[in-house]
Length: 273
Image (cartoon, rainbow, N blue to C red; front, side, top):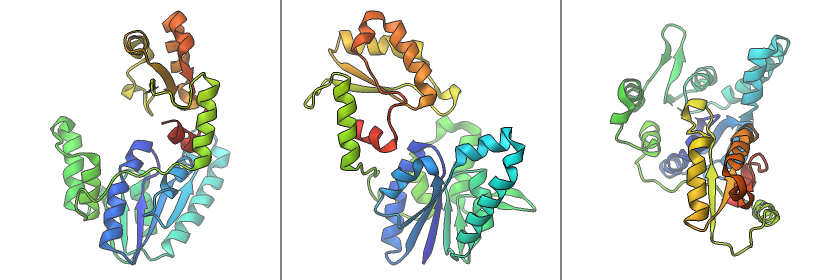
């Protein structure tokens, strides 16, 4: 039995599919689980023992091309066409789509000979849900997300048709990444047995989800002065400005901060943590 899971972006959301993947493995022990994700999330997905095969797209690059480079539209179309055609040939018996927009369109285009859960596309109706759990989640978020009484992990399990509590979240960090992380921390002045380190990551994919460097700064100062901690700043290249602002606002206390923002790939980030 061939199974396809779709989730292309957001590190935390992908990480929280791990118990769902374990549940699918337990429910279909002879099944082959494929995962469609973004290129920058490939390491995270491929480290999961319950994923047999990973397909990826450079989603961020595609989105930028579609918005800014019309001459690249044929390339994006052709590459997506080739990938989705390959997936369509797998005859998936179950497709679990864990995102909206692109995920729904991909699920519909890939099709299959079985069931799609989590949302798909219909030429007549647009975006549609084919399972009760997905409809319930969407309605909860749309009306008042504060009334949501379930973790995203449990929602994923319900949508996939497996029992909640199937397993832990999985991110296996290679030894090479742990070694690289150790070197980065040592360059910042940390010792191998240093248990005073605290990681702070200030960014988020969207600005409205960010608390702001000016709010993090007093927390970082408190960690350094009152708790005698060393702070390690983490984040992507897009978040380097936040780190620079925080270090500048800290003044002399910023000299003790180890700033690794923009300095780690996904595996090395895991090694640092």
